Image (cartoon, rainbow, N blue to C red; front, side, top):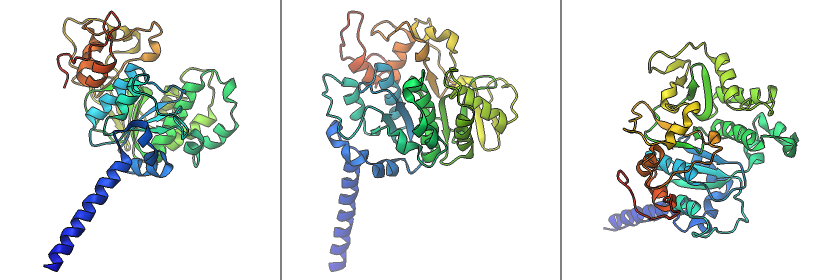
Length: 341
């Protein structure tokens, strides 16, 4: 009898410890409860399994636009058992709690169980990588494209250190990526760096960080990003053109067909904001890159427009659609459209 009582107490104690551990990782009380996992120790524990989905914000912006919110929410929806980690440079230990009314997207993302918001501390991130000496010596105020270049560097360091999948904040996830070590082709024999994934400490990414320093020229757009990935891919692999819809493989690296993430190419990016007779199925895609950098016209998702992008929001990021997407008169109705769950 005594042994049974001791066993029961042990089980209860283990369950209580597990519950308290979960509370330290995530809470619904928004930013005031982020402190337990804002520490470096909490970050290490969260990313230690190498299965995280990673997003970056290298500006000081604290309120994500609807497209960023959709990207993060859609990843959390597609990968419910994996942590979705959003590194934000504007976050730090002294940041005040944003209110729900002034920061609705921040509040929305904070309330999703598997989304975690962390400060982006580049100096700490680049420690023990080839990028550390570059970062500590560079004059950031003289860099024309610093937000983009610092993002290019940060994503390499994060995925090299911890593993996982990096995604740009204009990528909407629609189904799980089945690969571990991969690059995403933007076109035949040309890699993007908007989506990629690797196991921790993969030598390809270490080589990318070394190449980042050796061929540094931030004045050339893409030189530290997709051009770098393409340079390294050509060193790493002898790849030909894609055959039909098949992916390419060399060593332990997969080079995924442009249809996987770029079924609509950048010259045609406006098609996302058009009404289609029949929306494409994107059956050969894992996620969709919406080419936000090309959107200098400021095209937005409008509730009731029936554009392709509105339908993507309704299906893949229903909370963002419900709370953040306005109608043509500038109102948010709060109702979910068809296809939302």
